[in-house]
Length: 86
Image 1 (cartoon, rainbow, N blue to C red):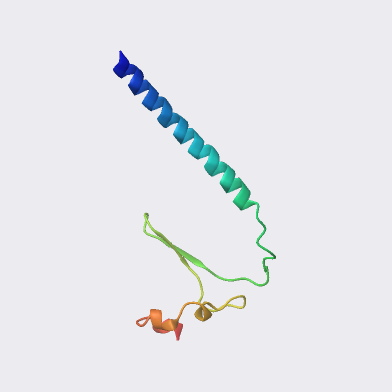
Image 2: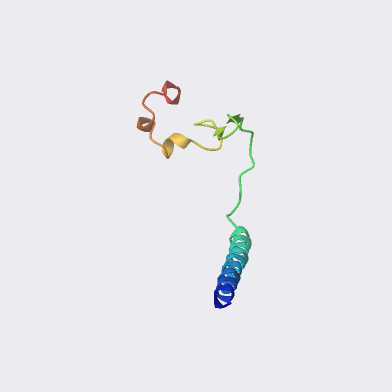
């Protein structure tokens, strides 16, 4: 009989911990999502492509657009075989 009560106590503790995790996670998600990030530029259009193989999805973005130049952050030397960066 003690073994059953111990098992039930462990299950109850696990359910409480999962519930507490979900409550904390949702509160953090709510508060972090409400933090303002500043003004977002909405000038012009940028053409993007989405590639998918059913498991993995790639967002293909231009390296240089009117809004942003990724070559200032990601060095061209990181992609030695891709000549389209040049």
